[in-house]
Length: 153
Image (cartoon, rainbow, N blue to C red):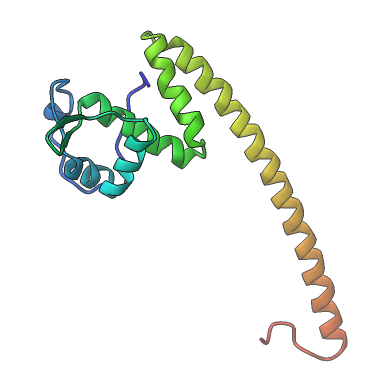
């Protein structure tokens, strides 16, 4: 994605900002795992899914600054609730349109869909909470009527 990415807030690794901006910088799987607070296995999974494509030097994986950026977006997309397929499609749009406009439009469209879905779910949860509060009030009143303190449990 063309929008700036930040690593996971969980990451406690010291960061050298000038090195992060170097497009020729190469990262090891251990460095990325540490920076994003994930396992090497997770990174290999995203590689197996075709979402990142490190170079190989023998058995060693060499991750580019672009791979690092894509990994950051993959993790952010997962935190936001996007499926791997959606994330891959969004990332791949940048390969089609290097301006990032198509990618941003699609991200906007999908974000709006997710927001609508979450708002619907929040409404459902609010309704469930209200129903449980009604049940709670009715049962507490019935217990008090029977001489039982509803707060003692």
